[in-house]
Length: 319
Image (cartoon, rainbow, N blue to C red; front, top):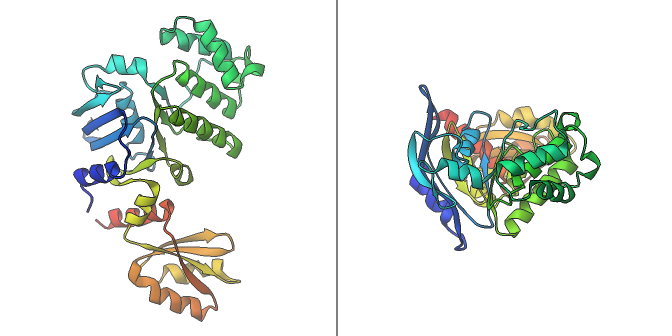
């Protein structure tokens, strides 16, 4: 069973000592009677990318907004870039780079005007120069005078990211930064996040995309505002009490129904021409019998993050 102390300890093991950018403990936020975030503890060092992973309503956005100094926690303590989480929220807001899931652009202002305004908000000495530099760095030159409201989803996201980073923050908080983007645009966003981390900044990214969560240095799986597992993506995958198998054969993908009816099977889903199966460790013998009956082969494969999420979800639903 995971406790707050246990998950915090596991997230810190194997880390290389570095500058602490985020250190918060027991952060809690309630909306009326609903607890959105419950005693969540988080650490982030310079150069790391931390993923908050979970479905809608798991508490990811609420946690990011508290770390950004936008929401005041009802409970908890800690520091963000050396500022007190509760007492110095205004200072935190002026230092972090926060990108919300909803587009926070002025639709009637041009790309240049949006960036210049954001530079002014952050108190940069030369807002025009900062906006020009951001336009070059984010390859927005052809849209300089175009109203932000006329940009496609991918370019609007790029502009929003440029605005969040215009003051060169040491800490970047990104809420579903690739939502609705195509593969090339998603890759560009993650390439930029990687560059920030390599340059010594830190990033906390919320996502429900498990493939993207694999790009993070560390991650925490959230469910109903609580951490259910944390560590590197590989550590999380290995921590689930389950095994992964690949069922192969001409009709392997057609065997989902009998496979999922087998005792101990958690879930199955297509993988290429085969069927990937997540199951309790003691279900292997049963799975091999089913595979043999249908002239298929069964191979044990390494657990990945998606498999672990399925296993944790089954465990939580049974509690």
